[in-house]
Length: 115
Image (tube, rainbow, N blue to C red; front, side):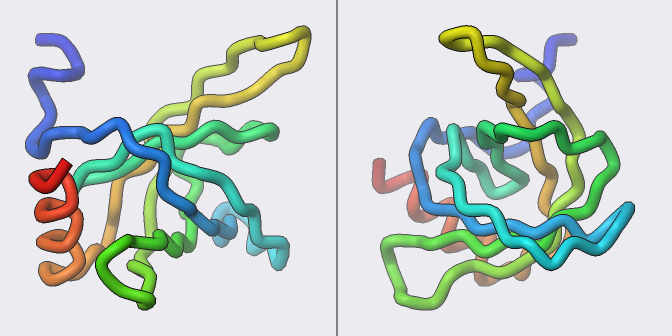
């Protein structure tokens, strides 16, 4: 079974503004601003300039088009893959939502259906 067959929710390749902060294994005060590569009601992925270890817990703020109120939740890093582009190293980070509310999950599903 490949990774796509394990997915519960369809993934939408969409660039959405994302703010995150690492809270475990070590609490960081610094917030990072990136855009998603893709998003689903189960998680998202983004490109990072620094490695973030698997099992790290992130505090997430996802800017959605339907409201000025961002989606706020915790996520767990489930995948980190290093790659190079223009002689620079980057990391593809896969995140699983941990405490996404049912209402916010519905917002993401409706967003994906509207695309």
